[in-house]
Image 1: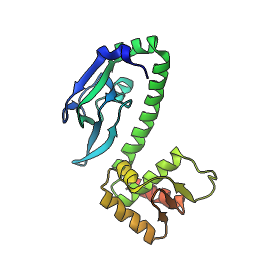
Image 2 (image 1 turned 180 degrees about the vertical axis):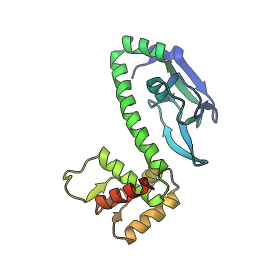
Image 3 (image 1 turned 120 degrees about the vertical axis):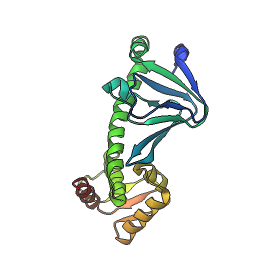
Length: 210
C-alpha cells in the first residue's frame, strides 16, 4: 500500500505507551506502519492477549464502523508508527485512493468477523471447550474438501491454538494431551488431525448453554 500521501496523519508511540484503552469512546482507527501493537482485553478480571499486530495491520476500526466504545486496549510493544484516521480523513482516503480504500474495507469485514469469533472463544470458561471452539473456527476459515466427513486436518501448532484461545501454552498442551488420550486428535509438528469434528461441536454447544 502506498500511503506516503497520508504521512501527515502519522503518529509515534513509544514502548509500553497506551494507544487507546478498553471501554473509552473512540472516533479513530489506525494502520500500523512500523513496530508492533498488542491488543489486550479484560475477561473475568484476567488480562487476555487478543493479538499482536504487525505493519500493515489495521486496528480500532470498530469505533468507526459501529460508533461503539473500544472493545480492547492497544499498547505499543516497541516504538510504533501508525497512521491515524477518523471519519473525515478516511473519506479523503476513499475518494483519493479507491484501491487502497477497497483493501481497507475488506480488512474491516474480515476483522469484524475474526473479532467476533475470537471474543466468543474467550467467553467460554472450560479450557477443553475453548480449544474445541478454536478447531471449529479454523474449520470455518479452511473448509474441508469433504464436508460430510468428520475427519479434519489442520495446519496449525500449539502456539497458534494457545493464541486463539487466550490460554498459556502449558494449559493448551494439557488440553491437547487429554484429547490425545481420548483418541480424539493426533498431534504432529506442523499439523493436528481431528478424528471427529462433530464431537468438538457438541462440546462447544454444551458449554455455551451453561
